[in-house]
Image (cartoon, rainbow, N blue to C red; front, side, top):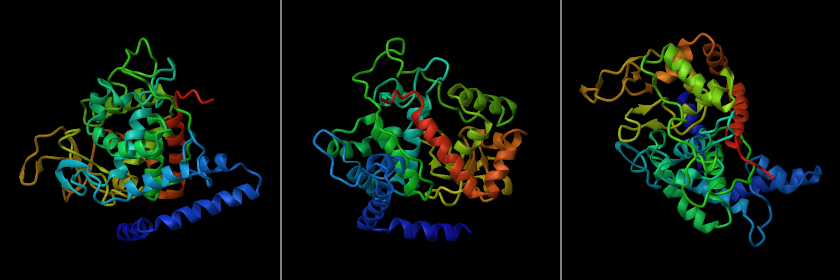
Length: 347
């Protein structure tokens, strides 16, 4: 099953830029024929507009194409010590999903602070917050694209890159709504609600290896943003993508064997594989933080992942998504779009 997924994804990745443009144009043309505006349909479907942008506007069509080219690159630098592709860190698309996630995941629904507006991660101290380790590589990769598209805000660019990355990894159409502003300089949170202190992002372990305290920590973080248990489990499915790095989070390894393909494999692995505490790494004692591994030692789960199957209220959602990828895609797209729009004062 996994090999088949790789083959399907590989075919999708070799689709030409021309073919992507033609497909997007056709979707927009159908929408216009149905009486819907080009911009509304195109952006809602994470597709660019069919016409060239006017001076001072963003050419979403070209921006999408440039982002997709970056996501499909096997040479875009993502340096790490762990020996994966692209210089050790693996494909850049999963990292772009993480960038968008972490830009938005600071939101507090009660105070209205945080969220993706402002692109505040560009500045210290947020750039150095523990949960953002390694994301300077993602931001650096987007700088040339920002120079080619000076009218897009950093805040919109970081989020749009995450939306396109989901698509590049074979995931659902999340949808995108522009309108985020950029903060001009680092500002204390007390003076600009877009800035937040460290500790807003979810941690991987609350000290009990994924049991009750970790489950409660997950709820505390996500409930603060306005999510429920079902949405928590749906958003966690993004762990089907990418891997952890010893020189970033301190953890090591991918969650699935198809780390550039968004699928329900993450949930299947959680339920069907055997997970035990990691004791060794490449023949030596494991000295990193507590994590779990499968019998091969090639796959990993964080304590926060294991909490989803050990907690009796989380687990039913894991089981549903493991059995129905279509349901996972639908719920993930809805929850991810909600996350990316938290706290944004759209006009």
